[in-house]
Length: 234
Length: 304
Image 1 (spheres, rainbow over the protein chains, first blue to last red):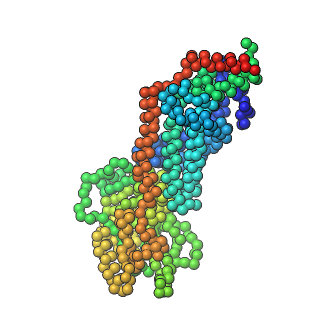
Image 2: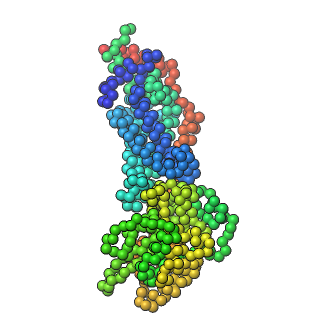
Image 3: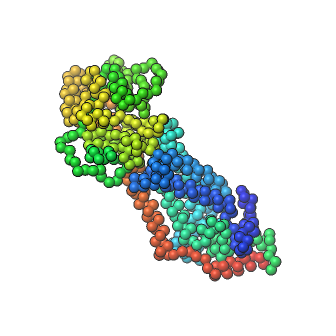
């Protein structure tokens, strides 16, 4: 299958893997990794500056941004940067994140998932159902955060909206940020929990064993393409 | 510095109590009483406010009405609002209301403010903005049930009537009170002002204004700026004075329950992750997985 944006098929992923370790599989290209970490940096900055304005106990975080007024000035621009960075990411990844029948089956086995009993789970494609849900939560939350954020952006846009609308937008903004932060905490923890994931997103590669264990259907795809397009000499 | 005065009873975005050692004796709170029935719309109070606070708004344009400027602004902290109302008898009533901060006992601006000490409430009831702590987010605008605070275009700080807290602190009355030629504006303790209002209301009722009354809305805990209205049953007639003002339930949800609840859930989510790692442990890939992968890869190569 050819990636619609990168023009890269799954065999290429294998071919461009770490040259030092010929048996590794390229899971995330340099472009994908860059994009992911740009989104991640924006998220951390937006979350810290947003939390500073959300709860008095966290107002001290505004010191990281040069004080209260600078936090107020920077936060919306950081948010916009995150939306733009995520937009590129979402366009690339949307096709890979469609929920399939096996994903719903996977979700029904959530008890096996959290207890590391992966042998009892249905096969997983490039992304599992949890990753797909994280994707959708981010899409929905960022959309709502963008729209509500514009309404409460006092310096440029609030004057175009009635106060009652601004009040609703403020609550919606806080709620979506809360959902997003909780989701990202789960996302980050999952990367720490499933060993090999951090390496995939920092260096790009995974071992065949990792792919076989966590994303078997995707692994099948990778090796079948490799077998068809680049038969090995043995 | 402001806290040193021991006169501050509430401070924005502050979770601990303000200094509380000094106990006020009796009702030490002050109030401004605006008697709309005595107001002639001369705007002396607007001028006095400009002069004392040294504010000069931009010169606007005349749109054929007395109200000028058209709205409150960062440099116009008080404003005569002129409403032409036709009463049921078909007569014209010219209802003039001096608008500005109401100095609520339960201030929505202070509740909404995210910056510690940018909004304070003094023991005498005055709600004041401390611009040195203001970050310009405009949450106070969202919190206010009377649409009073304005963010300056010049410096992005919030401004509003201070009830001349600087004058009151040294025993003077607010500048607007000084200037009123008809006695429509009076200032004193809140109890005295209520009593004065009660006498005025008796007088107004005897003159045929049977719905005359005092505007001291309970929804915001009462206010330290009160009105005597000829039509206290219809405050909306006075250029939209809200009938039952209160801090919006949306703002209360946002700045009340949701703040600690959201932090608690976020902390719980992180803790749940930590203890999952401690109890269940990491999900690792070992040699058996690698061997199984090799197996599958070999099979796949053999297949056509």
